Length: 333
Image: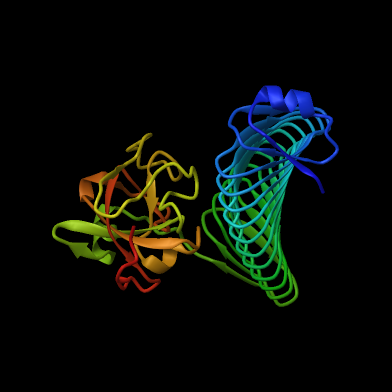
């Protein structure tokens, strides 16, 4: 296939009917119609109509109408309306409207409204509103509001509020609030609050009373160092940035502050830097480089319903560690 480099909107307009691949080398370009393009490095674009693009490395895009994209590396995209995308490696996407995405490997997505996604391998997603997803392999998802999901193989999901799920094979789910599930084959469901599950075949369903956590309980189970709480963060191995936004860098030896801090203890997600109390737990969310961090106790807010992750105002990364929390010499940047 013949390729042509594009360095400006003007060059694109002059070559938009080019029969080969347009290689986008600039930022802020708008692709319309039936254009086909490849974005490299830090290029960015907005796709409309039936436009199609392949995003590599740190490229970013906004997809609208029926636009399609394939994302690789650390590429990111925002999908609106009927847009669709395939995400691979550490790619990230936010889906709205009726957007659809297929996530593979360590890809991450947040789904809203009536969006739909298929997650494979180690992909992860947050589903909100009426979003739907199918999880395969070791995929992981958190469901909020009226979202629904079907889990297969070793996939894992946490369901909250009015969410619904079908669990097959060895899938595993934790249900909270009024969440409900149908468990088949060897699937496993753990129920809290008013959650319910229908058990079929060899599935296992266990009901537990919700444990209430507070700062005292959390302090008793965490490691302390020099008056600080030791917490752990999984970051992008290449950039040391968070997987969610790709913008917050956890550089060793620096203070990292949350840009949208909210101290409300009744809030579970958002409004803080999300860290885990063990190095291993970080890998439930993103399988990246694990950083050991020191956090002032006054900068941590504990959600009473779960301590899988806690929200922090400010943290101080001090070392790269393995999954057991042991320091890796020369592992930092």
